[in-house]
Amino acid sequence: MKKKKTQKYSIPFNGLKEGKHDFTFEVDQAFFENFPFSDIENADVTVNVEFEKKSNLFNIVFDINGVLHLYCDRCNDSLDINIQGKERLIAKFDHENYSESTDDIIIISSSDNDLDLSNSIYEFISLLKPSKLEHKNMEDCNQDVIKKLNEISVSNDSSDEVDPRWAALEKLKTKK
Picture 1 (cartoon, one colour):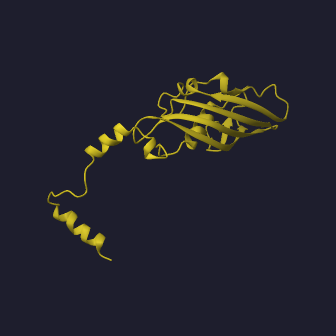
Picture 2 (cartoon, helix red, strand yellow):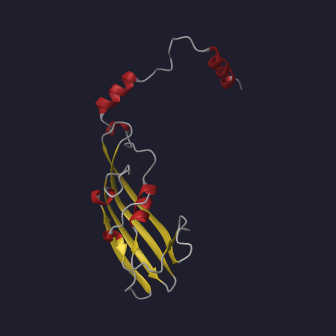
Picture 3 (spheres, one colour):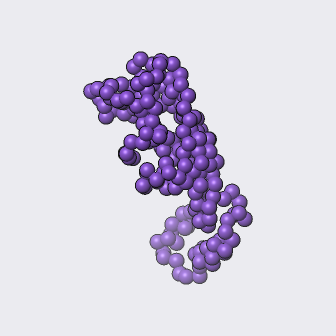
């Protein structure tokens, strides 16, 4: 997902000496507003970046810790998800194959003076988000919503006549 460049999440590498440098980025609601199709709207995440500058590339290690403020898939109440992860990225200079980036290697132009990490930070946080967003215990969910869902859910013990095609498949399922 391409978005506008943000200075707040950039590393101005031109003036840095070779070696390791540490940076800290705070990710919050304003960060996710730059990603209009994001399913994450708010967070309190700290991203510590170890940036190692070498003559022809950068080794970048992201240490991500924080909380995503999301909504439960079951009851739609607010839900806080703790995330923690470590990711690596390599940035290389290349004037010819500028668009040949991969998942863990990005290509930057030799004319660039800084490295915008916002897309990488967004992707790494998105990957740390669990696929199923639910309260750990159903008792923590909004009980009014759970009650309503139970009322409208389709019962498997329906007395309606079953389509004969499905009945034939059901015989295969029970046959052992």
